[in-house]
Amino acid sequence: MSLRSENKGSGKSVAKTVLKVFLRTLAVLGVTILLVLILVLGACFLALHGPSPAFKSQFAMFAYETSALKWLPRLFLGSEQFDRIIAENTMPEAAEGTASNTDLIQIPDETETDEEILPITIEEINGGTYHGYMMVIHDPSTVFVGTVEQFRESDGDVVKKFCTRYDAIAGVNGGEFIDMGSYSYTACPVGGVITEGKPVYENNDIGKWNLVCLTNDNKLILLKGYSVKQALDLNVRDAVHVKHETGPFLIIDGEPLEVPSVDVYGGGKNPRTAIGQRADGAILMCVIDGRQASSLGATFKEMIDIMQDYGAVNAACLDGGTSTQMEYNGLTVNNPYSPTGPRRCPTAFLVRSTPENTSYDALEIMNGN
Image (tube, rainbow, N blue to C red):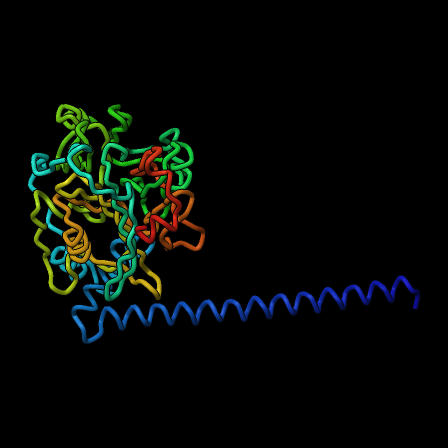
């Protein structure tokens, strides 16, 4: 036998061995994926058909508020039972035409107080099933809405990038964007957007939006069923639209919205972002981590409780889930739920850098020193 024949035979043997190893690995991987899938589906079945109605509702609402798993409870429960759970546990909406009362906010003149306080403070929040942070911005005039460079059917920006582009010291994610589950355009908002007095986006001429706004006199106002033009007529300078199902109003004129269910408390446990304002004008920005062992997330009732504890007169959730993120001075403060990092967004509520609020480092802010 020639050397060439031996090499040829040896090459075929190596190729067969490699093919066998590849096929065996593929088979093991396939079986593993199948077992994991069976395990996950089995756990979902037990959660949705187990002995606890409260856990069933909680799990159904958790999945309903995600873009990827929205279909899962319907698969196990059927449309009729799932729709009933959603109807029983969805937060109530404010009445059409609602506009929160800005007269309840009295922003003191700088000369009225001699007390020296940090312009921004960040505090940790810990509950039974959640962990997060509350940022308090004492000068509401520094808070505004930032946007992507161009609204389009493409990818938006993470809050860190918003902060860099606008030279902002801090910020959280903003309003809703197109997210159909199978695809999303994180650079394309839903509803209306106003930034620094300019109307920059509106989906259509009907304009029945749920708007979270800041006015020219630096007061947070919540508008239900308003167009961008109507918001501008009410002295609004910055605004984003929030989707009621995932970003409902929480507190209006000091009164919390009534929570529909003692089992789920107005929504499943998920990552949340909220914004509010105290009677003294200070802006509250809150993020709660979720879908993690260290923090399952918060319900809307828990978000109401948190914002009330911090003195919010008006408050609303913003977009949550994988969008939830808080930045301060180049640091991502919370732990966003996403293996690829914080989700991109079309808008963000930002805090403008000033000589006062940039004179402290992150450690001072976090410790309140």
